[in-house]
Length: 157
Image (cartoon, rainbow, N blue to C red; front, side, top):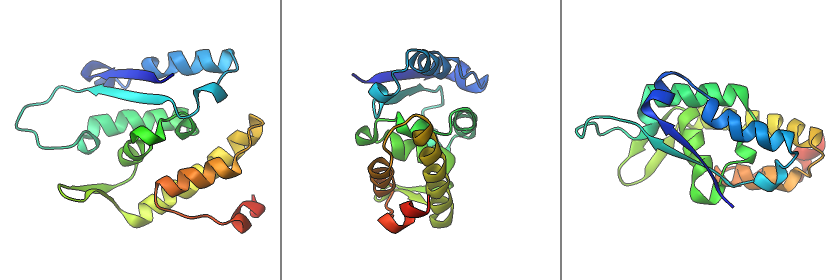
């Protein structure tokens, strides 16, 4: 079952994490985070003029909200619905990029590499704390973002 966190202009402008905190806190208290793996989506309803050509990930206020969310829950990619594109959109909120009409999101390669490795380290530790097998999950996540990590790398962790 997918979970949707609805974000409005006011929530974003006030940097209000309540819409995300409420379900995440409930899942943590009920110890059911594993059941929420790859089910989370964001519904963003941000007011802007019809002439504004920017993608949501190019709007500074939205990016700032996601930066704050990531600071609070750096392991959040575990919950995102990867197949629905939420992992790529989340990365776009945090990683410098350009949007190309034909090619879509073009991440800054070095920034994306730093983001991916930081998430691998954070999630590796978090998954161990949760007693969740993480090796294959982390490999899948990095593949979704265009990276291959071999087994020797995980032996270092």
